[in-house]
Length: 337
Image (cartoon, rainbow, N blue to C red; front, side, top):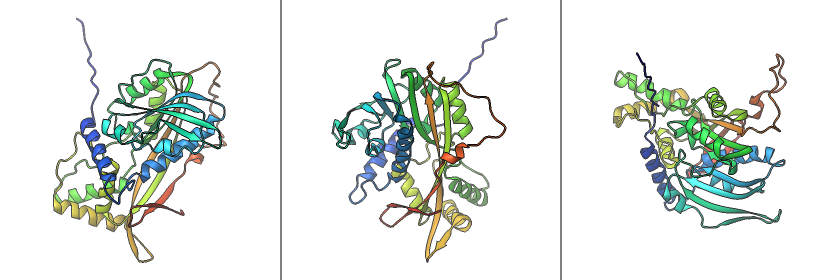
């Protein structure tokens, strides 16, 4: 008797819906008096990715770099110095997103007397049209958390990297929008006697580390930031999530939420998490950002050391937890913690 086992990947996200959400966000950001209004989170994470790249780029050059899910071009915009990139290929699955990018083909760095050649390309994250061992650096800023098969994408990234090439990325973690998740659950339990899915499921830090190893990366590094923004109320928060293109795209999401349930959610959110400071009321929304670095294996790389029982350094030392306040114009202002 022959036994055949069939394994099937479980899909969590509606990818065409997510593409549509991001294209709608692009339109929303281009409305009069709201340009870049909702890109502050992507910009903040891009700046942190750039800082991580700068910490390792002094010893490397990157003749060819690829950015996956480039969105509004935040990564390129935050390059104040050239970290050794000769050519940057900016990829996105949406032709509308690519068409919205500036048409400049060169970014100049006068102080360094250097330039980066820029190309744009429409392609899906799981179908990267690059030859094996042809890319020196891959960047991903808040894109891969919507993948139904992140290991497949990471394996393809590792395949296109040259030996000793590097991947640097950031995704939302499982504690993202935990306040919203909790408030919706309590409101639905009270009003409807059940709980739906309103915040898409996300990976944890341990999951990301495992995925890097399983995809064949060496010297994996994972660290976590918690970035908090303050909003006037739940309705403003939901409007900003829509403008970011980060609303729920779960295949199991509820298609409709009743007015009573939504108002109850706003009231519970205010009651549990609401803040009053100098006469101004606000609610917090926390975004857990998981940063990852993985290298394509090479003989010159150092070998992992045996773990020590008395570590002197923690990855938590790399984290940069922050709180931001969203003003009436939609600008994000950093607050002291």
